[in-house]
Image 1: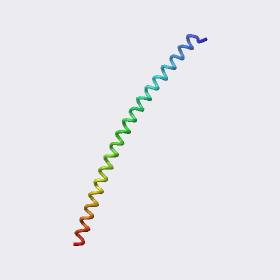
Image 2: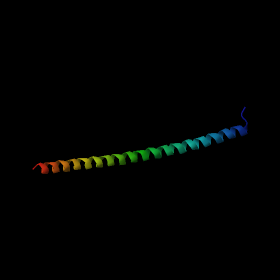
Image 3: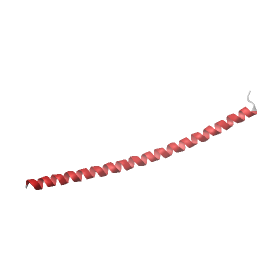
Length: 69
């Protein structure tokens, strides 16, 4: 049989665990948002680098064509 003190201790433990779960859920949501932001920044950087590569390749092609004429 549960005593009042034992019951109180269990209730306290449950509240503590619920608080921890809520905290971890919030941390998880924050990390997911941060991850989404980082992925977006990464994609922007990749696009920028791809554009630079295209530009440089075009410049090289133009320079080579000038050299042959």
